[in-house]
Image (cartoon, rainbow, N blue to C red):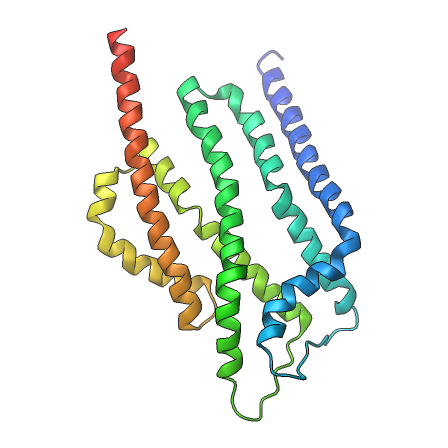
Length: 248
């Protein structure tokens, strides 16, 4: 009985953390639900600005005008609640971490949220204004641009997720260096392969156009360089801390 009690206690705490995370998403959703239509209008603005005069978006499903804005609001609620969700993850795992591990993980979780938001902002403010005019401009003669609102929502959410995840590259590199899986010097030696890889990933994670692929690949490369730099700084500080502990 004594052996199973700690496991049960951890499962109860895990359930509590998950419920708090879900409630935070629900609370944000309830606050934003009234503005669902306005949020969708804001999301569709980059495409509407690029469409020919007189063109408009359409709904091919009867329920799409109602469900598409609320689907966007639900996903946006999760994005907004990410810092609190990560905090719940941190509160669950923190008691099992050493002091130096806590000093690393806490800033990484905070930075992860900022980088995810930066990826979404980059997609909306940089990618969309460039990609949508390109799509409209290459449409064959006689083709009328009338995008379905649900298809457009799925398209932009995929891009948001792709850019948000891609901007986590520095976090992943620091963790790989911290666990000893690789080193900054080893990553620098593999830089040519990394450059090719980010363009391949850009091709797989974005729509089939060279603009989106390139605009995702270049930031990924820059983020890789930032991750290598940060990994090197952490390695130096970690080594210095170990030396100080040995001296003391």
